[in-house]
Length: 71
Image (cartoon, rainbow, N blue to C red):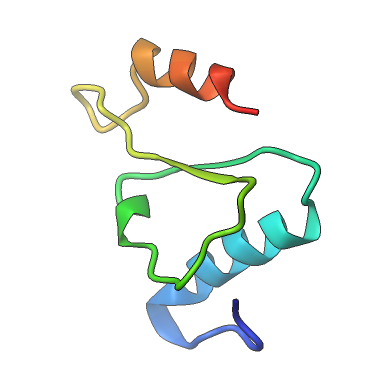
């Protein structure tokens, strides 16, 4: 993972990954239009990416159902 947070655009990504690493017993969901751009060799097993599929770039009901099923 990251030994120190990268500069620039990926600070948010590094913070999300670090949060998931620090909370391994929790399910962490990153629901963002750009979450598919996360660039890391390996994401923590408890970190799930959800790209909103709703018509206004928002989570749809189906997205929420899928998120609710995550462990």
